[in-house]
Image (cartoon, rainbow, N blue to C red; front, top):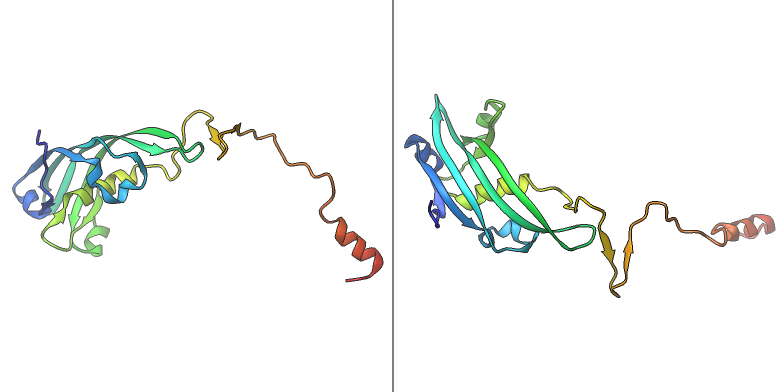
Length: 175
């Protein structure tokens, strides 16, 4: 396994040569993912095979990582494992993307050289939840470090009807 993967790749050339990329990509190099992580140490394990199936150039493989995200309830660290299969069809236009077999997602390339980290980062971002939360009920911590649990039955009670002022106007005719 390589500790260092190439920064840029030519997916069509790799598909023609039946190339394989296997190695680690540091999490800190993934710029778009960085603001979602509470800790960017660690790496993504990458195992990609490039090939052709008839006229279809494809990328198939597997990526694994353990991410430390921020829980959207309690704002504490949340361990989120990523373990996903990749099946991409290499295309150069939207028209080609529309003709891909159903099991393939499009990898649209517009230049010969494509950043490898962009492909990996796209796949990770697609596998993340929109709002990462712990499986258990977490606690929200207020700024003064007093913790309050979320209870669904707690509802604010009003001692006075907030519309009582309007009722007075209705009775007096002043508006």
